[in-house]
Length: 221
Image (tube, rainbow, N blue to C red):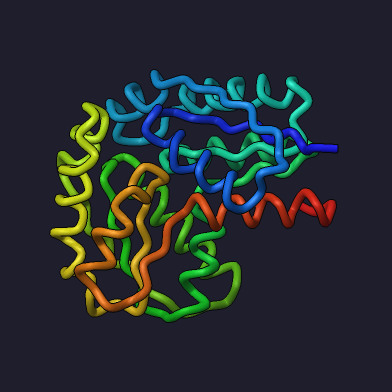
């Protein structure tokens, strides 16, 4: 019997990377897509994640659960506190986009770099990273480079320019032990980034799918 996993998308550009990851890592899963691209548009207008935005996101996630979801995977990294609240309210695994990638990165070193393209996500991701490090008693630093304009190009369908802009900034993080590509959408630039640096480059979608699969099949969150 296939397992139904609901994907919560706040932007269409996150969809193709996670679909590819499921095909490669867990093709047997039944994938349901829920997209509200207004979430990312409205989130970009807020300096801090507002109470109304959190409540809106939780309603979105609970709708996904009502579809008999056995697991929920969020593909946008700008809603950390809302994902925490959703996870606390549901009896199925609810995964943040980047927690699995953090785990992989910290297995490879203490100096972690991150290439990001969506500014509002950087603060919540940094908080999540710091919390993860503290929770697991680790010592690590995170250096983030925000690549302006790249995500706008991607939204317009210009993936090549997006990848070129992201890769052009990679050398600023060449001193790190490992580089994370912050968002599901940024994973498109992985090959281009790897051409610029010799350190490992991690993407979120594959790590997230592997973690969700392990959570579901083991019966654990």
